[in-house]
Amino acid sequence: MTRFSITKTALLGAAAFVGLGASAVSAQDAGACLITKTDTNPFFVKMKEGAQSGAEANGISLQTFAGKLDGDVETQVAAVETCIASGVKGILITPSDSRALAPVVTQARDAGILVIALDTPFEPADTADATFATDNFKAGELIGQWAAAKLGDEAANAKIALLDLNASEVSVDYLRDGGFLQGFGIDIKDPTDIGDEDDPRIVGHDVTDGNEEGGRTAMENLLQKDPEINVVYTINEPAAAGAYEALKATGRESDVLIVSVDGGCPGVQNVAEGVIGATSMQFPLLMASKGIEAIKQFADTGEKPQNTEGLDFFNTGVELITDEPVDGIPSISSAEGLEKCWG
Image (cartoon, rainbow, N blue to C red):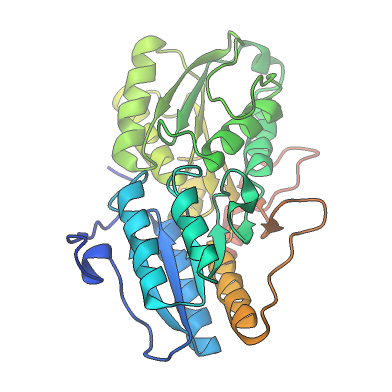
């Protein structure tokens, strides 16, 4: 039985607002756009809720757009162009490609629009005016430290599968992957290059597109490479759910530690049920609501948001969720996590 289900919604053609996945919250003149990678991942659904509530509270008209799937740059480019033509004051975007979207983001900024990246930083980060995000390296590091501590001395003999996002290797992907490896005690070479490590404990990497089906397929592929995998890192909780199903099909679901990032309510429930050992909780609703507040401030005063001291982004926080805490790594239980998931 699948432990994590996602409702899929159709995205129509790109010729009109509806075709880009756009919807309006109000008809007032002060406008903003939210452009997410998809509208099926619960993470982005919660982000949309945060933007909508923030827009209503601040008297801002909000248009929302989403790609057909993670990595759909073309639809995101079209959405930014639509927002520019609409004359909005600000754009919130989770870029499907941290580099490929830079030219159209520059066009938006040249038009006087405040552009804020949510969750996934651009490369370089100052492509956007600001970034509101989790410290994704820290999120990966926490679950890596937890997994190593759970294994104890056996961490030296671990067989690790890493289920990443996609071939674009966007910043959120390599930061979480590299953070996990460093937390586990594995040296990373080029921090922006996934899969260049030579530690023999790494069985391999595969891509999931951040969804359950992709997680299942990637896990099946890596199990063919080494059926004795005992640690699985996943880019997010839908991918973790798919990995669990692949392991369950081989009777190995109770032998393998699965760790992930997101902290959505379905994912935290999977921690409670033992599907996921630990996950790093993000706060997408906060990212989006703070983003809308920043657009309102920019529209009223021209002032742009400031980064968290010492970072090149505004850090919206991360918490480790597990029901098997280990010494030296702060965490909260799944019961506590369910009270605050994706707040």
